[in-house]
Length: 84
Image (cartoon, rainbow, N blue to C red):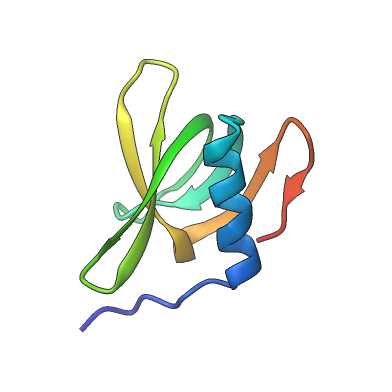
């Protein structure tokens, strides 16, 4: 059984807009490794797997990351903060 907690629909829409506009996000999140991360990433897609939602992103090296949406503390774009 997953401990995933769905995020607010408005926040989900803001992630979709960042993907559509190819807007880099400075993301702060807790990884599945239990460590906190802070990195500027390019959002590529949203995925659902086993009832959990993930933001798919590329880092500066071109590596793909998947971040579970309910583990994101904050996300800021160059335009405005994404309200987490």
